[in-house]
Each structure stands twice: as structure tokens, then as C-alpha cells.
Image (spheres, rainbow, N blue to C red):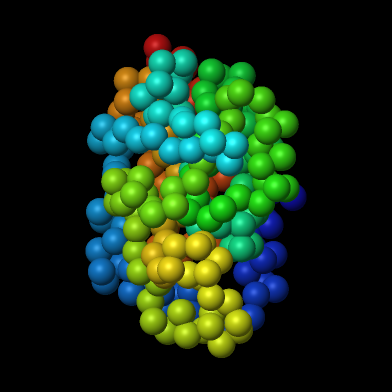
Length: 215
């Protein structure tokens, strides 16, 4: 099943009230101007250092010495739409690696053993990084406060995001995908206020292929 088909299936099975809350939150983020703050094509990617689950420090500028980076910011595994995109990204990672690109996944959530293992099987060009205080997501212009109505919706269903993330806050990154060239400049940027909408990794692979042919 393609990512878009999987996302459609998850939207179809979601509680209607939840979809209404998502739509309201997306409108609120647009009013706040959150998407407009995000890094765009042509911007230089802010450098950062984040740790893997086993304590290794990964520095963006050092990774770029080996080639381009596909970087995906996600809310957490608790989000079924993020999990669908993660599965698609992991399935596409071998194609990215063949084109000389590394895959970098960034989330404020402590990763599960399952996801850590899935990423580990992909080899040295796949990285799962935690951004616990959302400092890197903030550099990329992705951080927002979950709107109050959506917070109340989650809490009414016994889901406390501040505890899930171990941050004590209701801050999240807008899910976003970037391709950063070896020169440190962003060549692809994708994000949507509606977090049920995601970019098909096939487009990321196609963009990497175009970049390779233009060299």
C-alpha cells in the first residue's frame, strides 16, 4: 500500500471528532503564521548536534561531508500518521542510500526499542535522533503549541502529551521533510499544517536523483 493510500485509510478510520479537531488546529496554525516561519528552499540549513538512543552525537555539518541529507521531523510514534510516514521512509531508505544520501529522523519523543531496531537494520546512513527540548525544530521554524481545544480532546481520552514526550510541555514540531544538499543549502522543503498530510518518499528519491544528475 502506498503512503497516500495508508494515510487515507487512517483518516477514514479516525474518530470524526478527531478529524474536526485536526482541521481546527491546522487553521489555527495558519492564523499564527507557523508554516511561514519554516525554513524554505534556498535557505541554509541550521547546523546542529543531537544524540542517538545509544548516546552517539550526530552533527549535521559532519554528515554533509558524505553527501546530501534527507531529514524528517515527526511528532512521535504515538501519532499514527507519523508512524505511517516513518514506515514509508524506512522502506525508501535503501534507494536514498544508493543515491549517496543519509536519512535523518528527528523527534522530541524518546524512541521505542522497535523503532531503534528498525533504523539500526538500515546501516550507517540512517539516523534516529531525539530533539528533547525542540531546539533544533525551533531553528527550522517548526515548533508550535498544541491549540487548547486539541489539548482538551487528548486529555479527555487520557492522553497527556507532556508526559508522553517527557518534556512537561505541549510543544510539538510540525511534521516536515527537507533535503539538504552537501553544500548545506535546502533543496526541498515540505510541511503541512494538517499533520495527516505527508510527502510520499518517492518524491524525495526523485529529487535526490535530479540533484545527482545535475552535478
